[in-house]
Image (cartoon, rainbow, N blue to C red; front, side, top):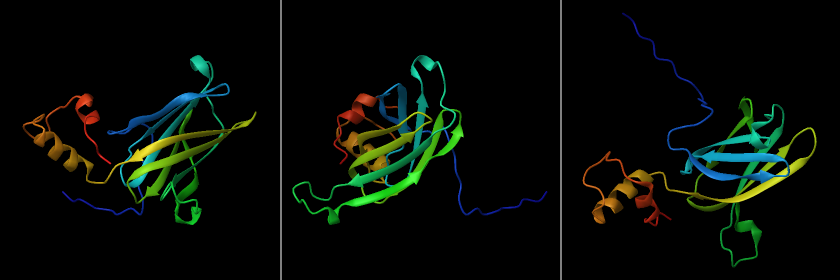
Length: 168
């Protein structure tokens, strides 16, 4: 039996992922928008679902762009210290789903901008997104163990425990 290992320059996976969090849900004009992300430093994969209310119609064609902005110091009016990533064009993965990957190198609060353009109009969606350090799992486990909320690794924990932690 022979095995062959091949290398790839890039790999993409679209749709829901383990660790996805819903980071935005709302309506823009007559569109329902849902955004999922794995908000950890690195290549942040973001999935955007766009539909008409009540699932009456799915968006088949739209231009979707995404950018993120990190304000270095809110008290400093000089924008040259801010970090901007993007805009990147989101790709269609399946009907109504668009995906983008943004290389985020810093943890903290980021302003997220999504621009949607369909056959009728253009829309702007803005929301904050907290990006966690890449070793967030290790940090969470250490803090939960200190608080005596877990006894061993890989133990299922309620979401309410995570909300008690200050991860920034």
